[in-house]
Length: 280
Image (cartoon, rainbow, N blue to C red; front, side):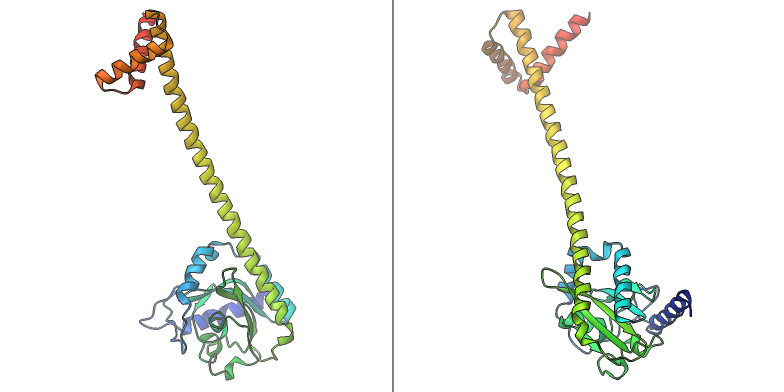
């Protein structure tokens, strides 16, 4: 079968799996109403993990390079499928994927969700006979995941926000001796997260600094303009009344205080009046 044919079959099967989780009253986020299956275990870090995902802005990052990493994982482990997932409170997003074109699935027991909850690698030679993973729609449904091997994506602040995983629809031994390779790929994904987040932060900081500089320049220009106007007014008084600079400034300040207006406004009025007289 060609790659396009295989992918088409995988996509159709995966979509059937997603649709098989649809309930008449369920709600979801993947193209229809998908009911999340009940989890047989607690997920105490769900909210903290979701906050970390938002803080790292992971789901806002274009997935192009993560598809490439998923393809590399599939080639290294000889599996038809591989995913880079991000696991929030309700869904498992396939942010990078190889062999299927499904954006994600609701959280189900076992597989990637178990990896992020435990923060440890998980290998299953045959998920169908694993008591925790067998109810998962990807296992029990038409897609029929059997072999699964995944490790957590652990951020610098200690949160497991997703997985790097390979899987197959046929049982096969788990290559535990190659865990370090899968973990190295997971580290590569997290490093990409960090680089892209740092770039976003740097751009945002540069924009803030540019805006602050523009505001400072505007303030300085306004201040220089005000000082220039006062200087012009003082020059007029010094020429008209033969005053020194101190006396000229005192005269402006006296008018400012008597009329209860700003010194700059007094100076601007004087300069404007003189300019009007000159134009006549």
